[in-house]
Amino acid sequence: MPREDKEKQVKELTEIFKRAKAVYLTDFKGLGVNRTTELRKRFREQAVEYRVVKNTLAQLAAKNAGCDLLVDYLTGPTGLAFGIADPIVPARILTEFAKDEAVKLSVKVGLVEGAMFDPAAVKRLAALPTREVLLSQVLAGFQAPIAGFVGVLGGILQKFVGTVDAIAKQREQAA
Image (cartoon, rainbow, N blue to C red; front, side, top):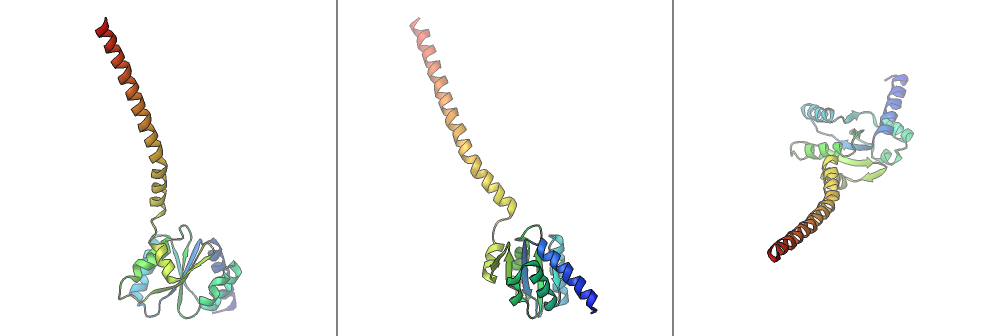
């Protein structure tokens, strides 16, 4: 590969590293063409960038982007999964894809928002609820005390109306 092409590829990878909220390194040794195509398709559907590049180019790009923690893991056949919009989506896809026993794919390491995650931690990340589910849970938590407060106010109002009604009936009978 000509030097200009390598420099262009390093520059492009550096930009992706900088934009990514998460980077997952995968070992795809023994993964067939059909399975690789299937994995790439899943990534495309979820707007995840997946690249297989020479390790030396990836190391340079990682260093340029300030992701020095990944350099030691860029050995052997390595695929790079970049979570641009959502840092957890690539972990979910990789974990789900690796569940199939016929698939020989493993996660080497993940770098999420500057924190390193080993393969076990990546699986735990993948098990987290989606962002939408977490937001709905938080909103439900905010709503519960308000609904309780409204219920208490309604009960007080109902007792007040009942008391006024009882007084009115008592005065009618006295008159």
